[in-house]
Length: 84
Image (cartoon, rainbow, N blue to C red):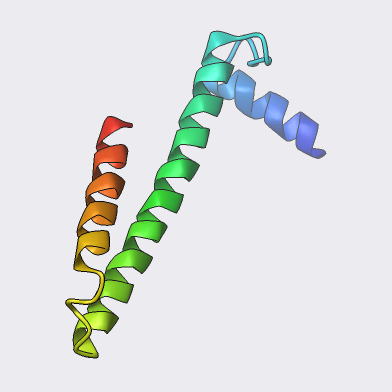
């Protein structure tokens, strides 16, 4: 059985009447949701790297180096993620 036949059988079994197209609202909502998910994952990764770096600096006894920069950077990172 080909993939297309399998998909058609599954759609029939589940009761899907219409496939989404790029013109559908649901299709565009799903694309937006996927895009936001990728952005949030990237932001989480960046925040994890930031915290890891600050921990490393603290372990080296350089915790006070650039304290203002760290504070303002973290503030902006958190503030930006909250707005989304």
